[in-house]
Image: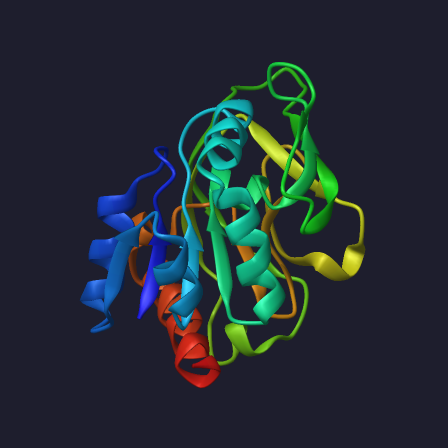
Amino acid sequence: MIAIIDYGMGNLHSVSKAIERLGREAVVTSDPALIMSAGGAILPGVGAFGDAMANLRETGLSDVVKAFAATGKPLLGICLGMQLLFTESEEHGLHQGLDLLPGRVVRFQGDYKVPHMGWNELTFKQSIPLFNGVKPGHVYFVHSYHALPANESDLLAVTDYHQPVTAIVGRGSLYGMQFHPEKSGELGMTLLRKFADLTVHSS
């Protein structure tokens, strides 16, 4: 079972439906015991970083996410959920994140359209099990802020939007995807399936 963590901000329905389309059980929940018992967990997110962290702290789910990550079971942050994995964000002031990955989330700066919205091509930076047999292609992004990992080893894939942009991060069994895999066609579903497969091996 894959727990989709409900902290009041996120496209929970579309993520759960995507997991179910893969033939896997998905449970949308804010129950700490249910989350901790899951074979894997997904932290989705849509909205502002500061609001999301406030919700996670108020519900006690920030500690639950950290505890889940410490078990070594697969955890995936999607879109804002990926950004929350980092140390801090400068969105509407400086906000502390979950600090599971060192780094900062910053706003796009330049004479180009923000938010970055649309289909962009992935470039894999590292060879990891998640990418085995997967051909890079285009996935769907919608974001005004992007992550700057402190460690190059945590950067797994990038895209290009007037600069290299962090697209997938990870360390051990912790992953983050800046794009929406559930809205990214065949490639997005393939990456979700590979993540779901990791949860089978971990449980």
